[in-house]
Image (cartoon, rainbow, N blue to C red; front, top):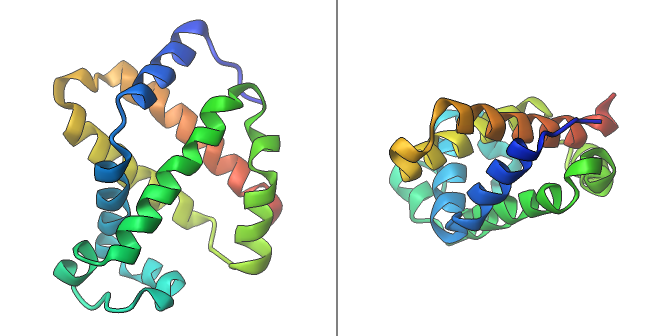
Length: 147
């Protein structure tokens, strides 16, 4: 269980209140697939992922990026019990999809990079620390079924 201060909860809530899912989601997943090409193996049904331009222009990648980013809403709504909130998704990713849990960290790093670029100077070191604490809690919860 993660302990959150009032300031941390307020920071996470503020980030999500300004989040442009349709922009950040596709960019983050595209970045992950381009920078870490081995992650593409989980998306074989998405069609052409042969180069950066194809990935960036792929509608299925964009759609899934938005879906993943909206998946973080669950953690926002249940910050005091993130582990339980992601129990079903943890089972899905481990038992059915067989996703390597290290990929959660790679994607979370890409989300952080894209968010930092979008927010600019508003994404202070303190904001980043809080956001990464949140993503770390989500990653831990998603990886729970693997343990």
